[in-house]
Length: 180
Ligand SMILES: CC(C)(COP(=O)(O)OP(=O)(O)OC[C@H]1O[C@@H](n2cnc3c(N)ncnc32)[C@H](O)[C@@H]1OP(=O)(O)O)[C@@H](O)C(=O)NCCC(=O)NCCS
Image (tube, rainbow, N blue to C red; front, side, top):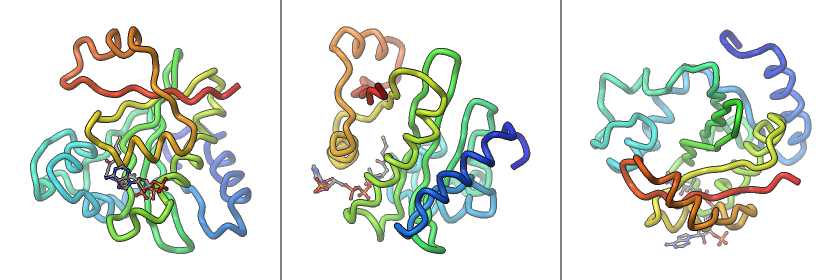
């Protein structure tokens, strides 16, 4: 996996091994799936989630290049058998780790895959060694919030919420998963 630290390949293989038998596995994202994942965005908000641009349909110039390449961002595809059904990112920095840009194939939503995707992403996130994993979600995204609650995320305190929303384009609902 060019650009990724060498331990990441081993980590992804370990996760795949762990998931063997359940029929689902997390794999490192490869660019040939860019257009497929872009096609999962069903409205302008979902396009914005992936590409940063709030417009629909998905901007043609971004279909193969929407993914942000950065050494601090790990991108994953979630497979059910041979079929890619979900996408998500783990954002790492020295102080914290955040799950981001989670999306499930619209034809596969509502079957528990979102929750499984979050649980799978927690493994590389936890491996980063921080006490908490965070994520931000729009407060009107009831399905996503329910998915995160189901996995064990809880709201951060109101004070943290206010601090972290200062300077954000919208007031997000910030959630935390305690690893300890
Ligand atoms: C959010 C998302 C990843 C969830 O994936 P999913 O596969 O549908 O998730 P699950 O099936 O595991 O869980 C969905 C939960 O929402 C619940 N739900 C469905 N509609 C709901 C509604 N209108 N209000 C509240 N909860 C709702 C379901 O009942 C289910 O909870 P349950 O298992 O306790 O019954 C998926 O909907 C998606 O890709 N959305 C578009 C992108 C997005 O918003 N990503 C999140 C960005 S922070």
